[in-house]
Image 1 (cartoon, rainbow, N blue to C red):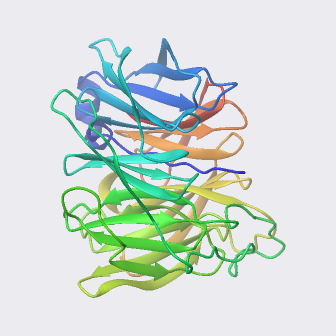
Image 2 (tube, rainbow, N blue to C red):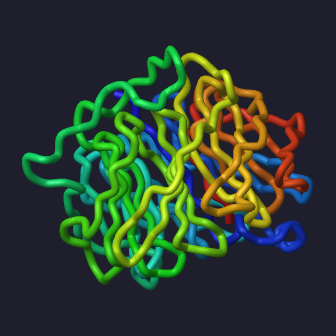
Image 3 (cartoon, one colour):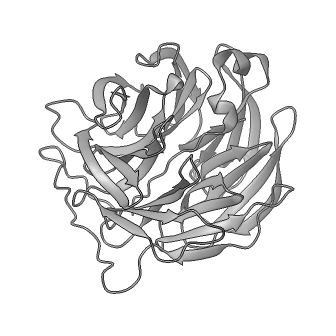
Length: 370
């Protein structure tokens, strides 16, 4: 079974480049066992260079990381737990807690509204874990993304896939893949890759009950991760793994509305590719989307929020880019199959520039910066 992952950004990753250059900044990279042996930590220089700080051992596939304050939270995909680490002034990590995540196969987590929110690929459950004052987590309250006889998965082949695509993953059952609150604090959103659904709940304390709204996306597309418009939280952009498309969704009081769907692959592309990660570029006028097998970073313009426009593609200089982390004007792409990070400079957000630097990390899956 192929499992997909995304990366979340810490507040430090959103700082202006000048601020990031004058304060300590560290990068932590989660990996897949058995090649990856845990979390690999680095100091980020002003020019984006990485200095290795060492390994924090964890052989349970801590594949998704998110940071807040001086704490790093790792979804242990191989052990159904969330590990909580404290970072010291030198960027080194110390384990504070390992806590059950509330489901099987945690693949993504986010932090907001006093909770850690976790999506579980294995059993399609979502979970809310209260954040304690010391950074530790309270008991998980979890709920299924779907219940009853209408939880049938979507078709194996995506209706809007490129010609000749053999992309085929996750449509044998429901699979939760991401959960995150909207920036305006009104909604909690989740994706079900197996059922081709975007789920939307009112953001309230504790765990939501049945989904308030379900939006059907194109059949077989496999919605994976999403990003919100940086200045208007009613717009959300959903990246779909098997169709390699980006759907524009408007959040309204009457529910989510599908507005548009575009490919994140070049015109004329034929064959198989899997979209993986989507994130906002510096300045908020562009999105970046990653394509695995095509091994590219797609640049998408947000000049018209309702109609994103694909601008260009850049080779990631590696194989199977699973996720990326932005720290100021620097972007680090996790190339899972070629065991390295590729460094990009984002001085011109519409033209990411490969710096020529790469950093060896075995089977990198996700990263966060502090």
